[in-house]
Each structure stands twice: as C-alpha cells, then as structure tokens.
Length: 296
Image 1 (cartoon, rainbow, N blue to C red):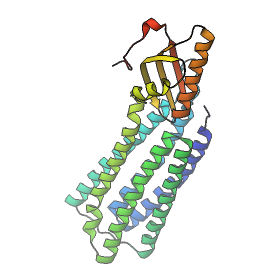
Image 2: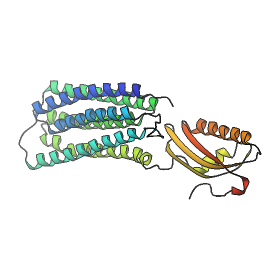
Image 3: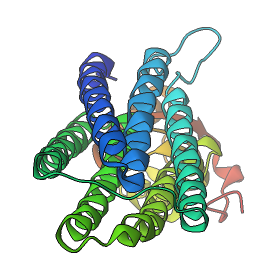
Image 4: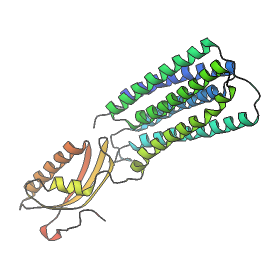
C-alpha cells in the first residue's frame, strides 16, 4: 500500500498557517468592533488550527505499513485524530452557546463596525472557502480521513463566517445589535452537525464494523472457476482505504498448488473490486461445506 502521508502533511501545514492567520484576523476585528459572533468565529478558527496540529500528530503515527507490535498497521491513528477534531468541535459548540446566553442576559456593549472591517470579514470568508475546497479535494485524492475530517471542520467555519457576516451586515446597515447575538445559536447548530458527521464516519472503523456485506463477497467469489463453496465470511476496515477479509473456502481440486492458484485469483478479484485489502482464506476439505455465509 502506498504511503501518502507526506502529501497529506503538507496540506495540513498549509491549513495550519491559513487558520492561524484567520484566527488572528477575526480576533482583532472582533475585539475592535465588540462583535460577539466574530469573536466566537475566531475561537472556531482557533480550533481549526488545533485540529490541523492534531491531524499532523495523528498522521505521523498513521503508517499503513505493519510492524512487530502493530501487525495490522497504524491507520486507526487517523480515526483517533478525527475523533479529536470532533471533540474540538464539541468544545466550540458549548462555548458559542455559553457566550450567547451570557450576552443576552447581560448586554454590556454594542457592536461598532466600520466598512473596512466588514470587507476584511468578506476576505476572510473567501480564504475559508478556498481552504475547504483544497483540503476536501486532497483528502479525496489521497483517501485520507484526517484531511476529510479537517475539511469538514473548516466547512463548518465557512458556514459560521457566512452567518456572522450576515449578522454584521444587519448591524452595520440597520444597527441591529441583537442580531449579532441571536445568530450565534444557528452557528452552534452547524458546529454540532459537523462534529456528528466526523463521528459518524470514523466510529465504525474503530469498532470494526462490517466493511463489506458477506453476501456481496460470496457472490463475487463464487464466480471463480473451481470454487465449490465459500462461507464464514467476515470483513472490517474501510473500503478504498484498507480492508481485512477472512473466509473459509472449498475448491474442486486435488492438489495444493491448484488450490493456491485459485485463492490468489480470488484475492486479485476482491482487490480489484474493493481496493487495498489483506485477505486470509482457509481452504477446507469438501466435508466442511457450510450454508452459513457469515458468522451470524
């Protein structure tokens, strides 16, 4: 399996630099304009930077190659890194709600926004969108879960900044200071949804959920000439990234060499359909034939 971590790390370093710049810009403008929503958005960008650092750490350990202590490789470190990103998102969601409620109960300042500051926020939004598209593209290209999770995190920042920008336009145009606080609540919802998306895509990998339906594997294997029966099929991992498949097989041959050739043909066929895979096939005598495709 090709190790593409170096390319992914370069993308994360770029994302880290951009997110630090965005955090400082939003924080400065937010403090100068007394905008709660923009200050919270700066906090969100700070967690983007933190998630990039977390992704870099996870990537350093997420080698696809096995070693003595990790015979199945280290790629689950990527999923652990993605879960850390989800935790960051949860922290942001809580902070947004806390700050918004506090401002509603104790309104102590008004938003004072200039046209230059508004244009700076628009520029920041453009940078956010560009970073999201680039990270998502590279995550799909490299099939890297950390990059995809980080892109989702950055996408939540895009929506956050859009909402904040709309609120600031309302404040600047109509002097609706309350809008700056009220719009913090949908921002929290967007952040929570991003965290859920990251969790939903990585927890099945960590708990070894079935990767491929055993019926699909059975149907494919039975097309190979010489195969009599295929049963007790199991799989785990992530299709397209790396899958581990086990099965019991009965073949209609009398010598080991021919049986071995059939198992190699099955391995090639499965890898063509499901991408990188490590496959263990137990060849059994005809008396062991079973109608049970999977273990359950």
